[in-house]
Length: 264
Ligand SMILES: [Fe+2]
Image 1: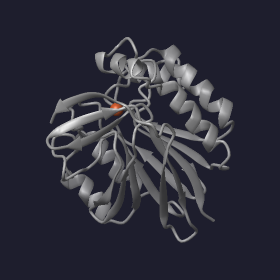
Image 2: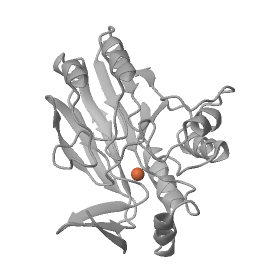
Image 3: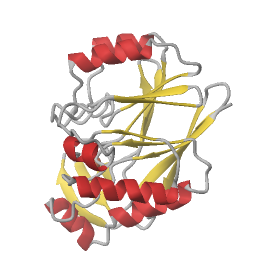
Image 4: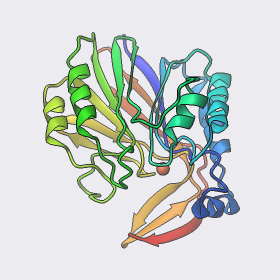
């Protein structure tokens, strides 16, 4: 039996006052909450086994903002298991308190696992080092190596915020030797992430690697410039009984307005 899951990323919720860029997005008609709600409404028709979220869920927000996101997800996807990775704009203590309901909420790196339908999803914290390109520290790499080798029927899916992207060396992580060694074992069957606000697909040490777009805004690149638009989208994914991944990109706001351009 396969599994069906949604992959949403980079919603940047509740950030309209925290960032000049998000103020411009809003002025141009961008709507992070509206896009996220639309995505969840569509995913509610898909009989999901799982929802994964790959960071920048809330933009420098509070526990209340994360609690609101949890309530929104439960409204449309009641009972669907959810696992997250932290992005460079997430606040770990607020996520732990508001989304997970933890009484003792600290800012330590957020790592987690979730088992669904014979698959283990492993979340590592590539944003904790606060580098634009991301980074994974040694204790996490050791933990990943240990967890990935534990028996699991179908295999492991790795999630994090930052991609391993050889074409964008300032916004993608290096393929650390310890990580590459884990990937070469074959224990991890696919990697999902975000951060780029654009779709990228490829391979990392022979493992399929899917970078989803943002539900807040797209960043396209053209002639040395980063072009920000109000378009947003997400991925509908499935793994068939043979373990083959299929990832469908879906737009929730097809009419994109350019609201900002920056040099790369
Ligand atoms: Fe982001």
